[in-house]
Image (cartoon, rainbow, N blue to C red; front, side, top):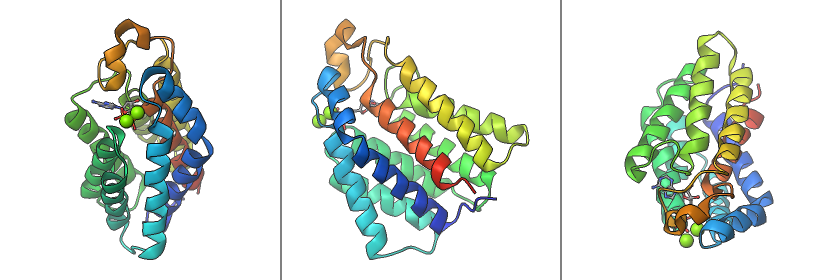
Length: 208
Ligand code: ADP
Ligand code: MG
Ligand code: MG
């Protein structure tokens, strides 16, 4: 099966960086509609720095990889998404205990809980939580059914994409988009869209 070790986690965040770079203009377009048009640039800057940091000083400890991601994002991403993604990876690093599928699921669940606490948001508020929450739920459910990690991550990626799409009709209750009130409806949330890329990257990189 897929190893959730330092190399596997590095492959995950490297694939996330690649997807963010590829989708940078789309993320910016979404943020132009309901925010300040910087989400693509913010995350691309941050994840480019993450890849450089991991190449510069490769960590042999899995939790250290996640911690490097966290500190780099907090340092380099301006805007709401930097501290929130930073919190996700910092909490995941702190919770990671082991290298199997259930250790990975527990780590990302801790990351999700950290984002919710830090941002004081809940599912339905039109944020990254709307992709991350169904993804964690699908991951846990698939593993509980006895499916292997690659299969469970595919289910999680589908759930994340569904959660992203479900943000379109929502009125934002957190972040800049909430300033628009009802006018935030009719567009996908940029952070939910990047969070779906994060889960997609896990499905691709930890495919076994
Ligand atoms: P900023 O809004 O500061 O320009 P970004 O554009 O990089 O930052 O990120 C915006 C995204 O951050 C939103 O689309 C949303 O998903 C997420 N976000 C904003 N506030 C919160 C919050 N309180 N909790 C969770 N996610 C949030
Ligand atoms: Mg923005
Ligand atoms: Mg901004």
